Image 1 (tube, helix red, strand yellow):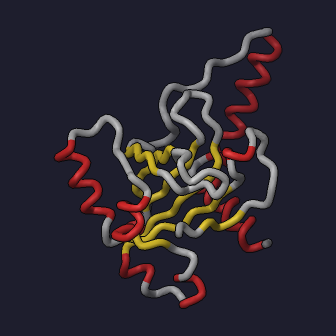
Image 2 (spheres, rainbow, N blue to C red):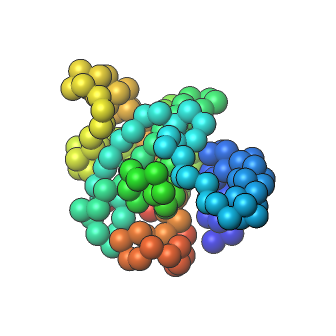
Length: 173
């Protein structure tokens, strides 16, 4: 469990949340002292521009949509923040890390079992890429087919809006 929480924490740091919290707290304090609330941002943080919607990411309701906002990161990794909606005030409910097949092959069998192969997973989850033309979406999907993803689910939003329950590595079936 400690390893899962450590990985979730590291994933959140990778998303820039740790670095942005001081600024957020300062902004929230200023807003609170002035009696005004800051509006929620209208765009995802720090370069998360690839938008993917997919089913089967939440065990409580396989038909619920996981709204991914993804960006490339160092070492060929892709990081995705998973939200419960596309609304400006959507809740962060998970993180998906995507690695190339060559990287996945370096992992132990135990670690490999925690990852899903996108060539198999993408068709199962009815993935869509909102705002992209079919030709653009095909290019992105084709680039993801030979990758593996690992989902760190902070909590299942289909079971309630409060972040309760055990965080987990969720393996898509």
